[in-house]
Image (cartoon, rainbow, N blue to C red; front, side, top):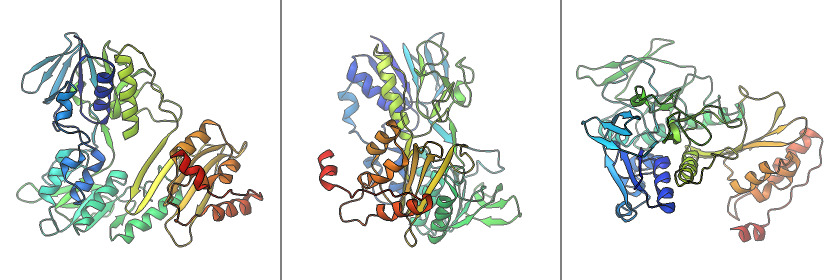
Length: 449
């Protein structure tokens, strides 16, 4: 019986295992050093905030794996021997495979800061990070202040977590506005203000120089590079992005770049060895996507796609239109298609932007200034429907069409206030047009549900 071994029990590896099992009777073993059972990584913050217990983050009951004949092995893989089709474990054990799937995910970036490995320094990516946070920041007595380094999505989640236990937070962001390499200026500025409203000490244009230790090898303070200021703290969160977790592959002969190099079929340079999820790097980017995408839904899609190939239905990975969602403290964020920051905007692109005068709601619509083709939308504080925007992007609809039917894309409940008329009125005024927005048809919306 063919033996499929998967290193990593995150969304990519587990999805691949589930879909291989749906389509075959192959022997499947999932290897993980992090935890025995698959859990939702994005839910870790809610465990710390007291909204759920860790076991609630596990989508499947513990009996699921045995019932579906999926073997689970805990252990740290130290090397891969492709010519022997074997894994070597840190404890000396050997595991043989017929086909190998590398789905080892990411690890927090470290940039050689002095003190970056002290007790009390952590990322917020793994189960072990949650355990460290509970140890070093159980409350605001044991931890009277924390510093977060890096201004991405993980950083703002960690800030929210710490503030939920009333721990003062200083947030160091090297850019001159929060996440402005991704967000247009209007949106980035709104998030800056929202962070400060939550009593988080946001320091823009600020870099970490070093982390200082007390006499017990634990974090005592950080030093700011630009000013030499010392900020005393008990915990330092390193959230300056992530990088593929592939150090153990350096002697394997598998082609590596920043991640494990793969083609459109998620194959590496060695037969019967594949890579999926955060650790996989496309030789050539797909459309405007990045070569490496550390996003939950693309990891799931890669797992589903590769399972088809493993089960003799060779299938190319096609992620479709870009989308993502997140939450900045109290503000929900969604993006469909491409809305680049000013830093990454293309020559043919222009924006239409609307922002509520009092509430924390805004949208940015990107479109081609020559053809009026709709390219993408960012929404903050107004929930929109993925399926409708996906359809409009596939149909290459114009911004006029999008604005005319914008109400049907609104996902907010029936008695929420709607803003489509106000949005279209602003567009008409700025562009000397006379688009009429159609009212939201609840009958049509519910018939699709």
